[in-house]
Image (cartoon, rainbow, N blue to C red; front, side, top):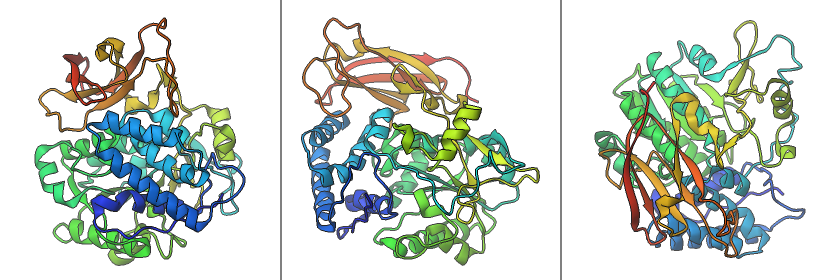
Length: 460
């Protein structure tokens, strides 16, 4: 099913950002992985967006993220409307990432990656290419460049995990500025002073890996910028974002070296995007800077292997990588699936679960697993467990969070049923070495358990 959803009128960045982000995804004429045969009319799509916005607004009136998440999940489970589910599943997926349910988010929203006529030949078939760890190759390719642009799939934080790992490598190469999509401009000054994100910092910063990315950039000494357009859509939004980058980053620092994190095709360098051009195209035109563009959303695993790009399946079958990889030829030139649109394509490893959570949360060795059990819930299920560095307030986005469930009632979408005779549930938080305070919260947002822990080791 092809989807192109018009956007409702938007008043401010914060109040209508979900619809804006949804439009940017769906207007690329993608296929929803779970879409059955048939199509939804434009009117049905518009109604589904409006309904999704209302439900999300209602969810945000609940006390605490756990109650909001459960409200969103039940809204999805209680509807059989096809058009609504196709739209709302992306809204649900955002919440699932925010509470640490990454496999659930991948199930809820996934873009089928079919072979296309503009695909480059497979790096396995085209002679001269070899695979390299992405962190090493990208650091080398970035030498001498003034800008590096990464993209991500907002519903699959694995696609931002490599960007987190690259921040220290690129800082060591002389990059000094970092800009990220959907940060809120009115918090950026306080964010930099605090050194950590809160719910007031941005839209996707509610997700712990995204928050880790922003926090790490600040700690590494990057100048951090919020470049999102405040009141534009389509090509106007793309052009406004590019102007914001030029003005904010290069006006006072003309020799700045910039790292950008953006969504999907905002970083494409050629071709039509929405009703005009992508942000990266506008950026190159007005700055005369050719960014190194790193595509991270196309060569990833899906819940159904049939939804994977054929090249992805072939590379996984032959190489079975345990870390993100890219392909480089004998002249040190990178391979890209869409060679006219991007400079480099990243292949991410297949999802590997440990105690129900993906092991890519290790972020290339930056984080370690720390086991928590159902005793954190004090027999009040479900509960949400959060870990914050010791000394950070409750307003800070946690370093990691997860939801523990233990019940036998009828359940909603992606809910795991446990009987009373089952052993106590166990899961891992993934944390950088250091001291933390971990909390558990019930559905009323009350803290039911609190303790201090130490994750051994030294930060890389």
